Amino acid sequence: MPLRPEYILPVLRGMFGPEVFVSAQLIGAKSAALSTAEADSISRAIPARRAEFQAGRHAAKTALNKAGTIQTCLPMGEDRAPIWPAGFTGSITHSNGLALAGVARLGTSQGAIRGIGLDLELATPLAPDLWDEILMPPEHEWLQTQPENEQGILAKIVFSIKECAYKAQYPASKTLLDFNAFAISFSIKTGVFTATFQIDTAPFKQGDVIRGKLALIDGMILTAAAL
Image (cartoon, rainbow, N blue to C red):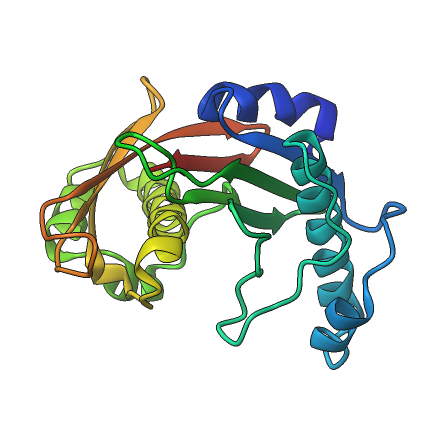
């Protein structure tokens, strides 16, 4: 069963704070019709993917409406990322029947938001054959010190954090990064994580840190960051 929007939204608001506007939409529920440009960009996808896309766009447009702008079209760019309206940035994620979106106004002053990361994953173990691709050697070594029955879930959390951090940095860098671009540290108890850049990718430098929040909710992993 997917998480109900009314249950997850208060958690998500608390993770981001008031500067980020959030929305959720059940995949398959009645959603606003796609614009022609949106529909064209997803025309070759299988029905399940089209349903995810429509729910995600509905959630994103609802969040933008909360932020004070009416948006009827969020086309897909050549990099397949949403093209957000001028002055805004955002992130969309979907998993297990639920789509989530977070948007914020871009700022130029110190401390202003430059990007948003949002990721939702099933809290199921990450397949061991993916560990070498996802985890850096120190992360792999740390994982081996954890209880064996928890290692797969912890690896999945690392994966979700890296997805979240990638999305957060992308609006500023426009750079495709692999999983070795970040070193991850997190605490389930405190619900916080850090993702430390291992490379220079302008405007970010090696050693720069993305800080975010994580939560385990009814069999789901939720990660969120605004930088």
